[in-house]
Image (cartoon, rainbow, N blue to C red; front, side, top):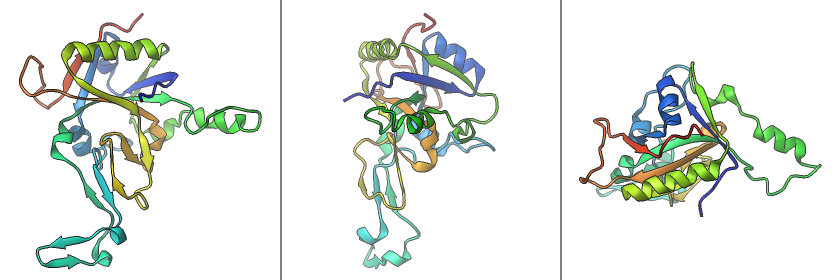
Length: 219
């Protein structure tokens, strides 16, 4: 099931990205780009654990190198794995104002709910000069994304990011690209990810990025 937040913020650091976004160009970097990106001071955009496919807690996995079975005490932390083909998936990321774990709003939880909705700008890690474009009609925006992906023959997955505690999460990750550690949870990220077929008419940038044209969203 696709998650459709009521309101979506699109946050960009570079001004020309904002302008091109408003004109309908969605610039999609690879998951590898976000994994390898070295954050500058004040930023929290790159994630060395981007695209994880498996997290194994030391006491719950068996690691063997040749004939040597590694003792859990010898492991510095969880065993992490990812698939190379996943790193080439293209992602478009946005900040989403959403209801989170609140299934209803009442007088009793209204204060907690409004506190949850606050944008924690100081924790977003966007660096200096960030700008935002507010999408007010999310259903129409998603419909245009769907239409563009269908036109281009792109398989698409979309939804809210899941944030987990690396110290106790264990097991395979069903949807790589949609899980991040809790240190990123202030970003309230919604993203959609596409797999661009090899060859064909799709134009891939030299850095692996892809531009999806959905038409102007300035209306």
